[in-house]
Image 1: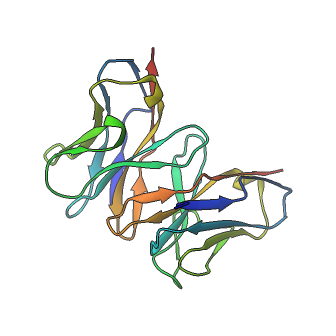
Image 2: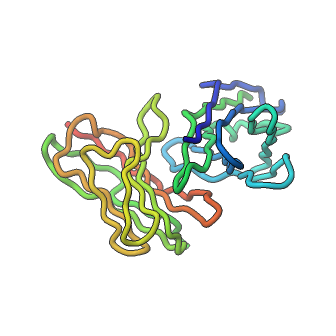
Length: 111
Length: 111
């Protein structure tokens, strides 16, 4: 089965600084990888995906993710964090007819 | 487009009571999913439906049943609620390239 791991439960950054939320994956075959964001009391929202092509994927709200096949990683990044980016972030991988989600990383951006 | 809608938003049940959570999507997606989200346990798949007329068990199906009424609607039924089913329930539908769109959630408390 496919799996993803998010090694950090919590990431804290100062507003204006770059942010990285980490994700590693384990798949057989070519990976379909995703990032989602969840704001308090809301459902998950799709941010971006990697299926094939450029290793740097751009998504919503200024986020991007870097696919690294040799390190089996798909880290979420943003050059300059905003307080409004504070939320719960999930990495996911396609797994047959469904997706397998990581346990989530809480991002806190402090003013 | 309303996207994915869920009813009700909140529900309190007594142990042993039954209820049905409703979900509908207007994006013409074939696949739909039911998840539960508990603190510290991430997102766990209860049941999914790859297409109208088919349903499959996910990671935590015990105590639940589902019905894929038509392409738009996918309902989740608790026949005899237990306190362990206190959770936030999310419905989602999926595009052809596997990104998922989530509803706003149902917050269920079983006393």
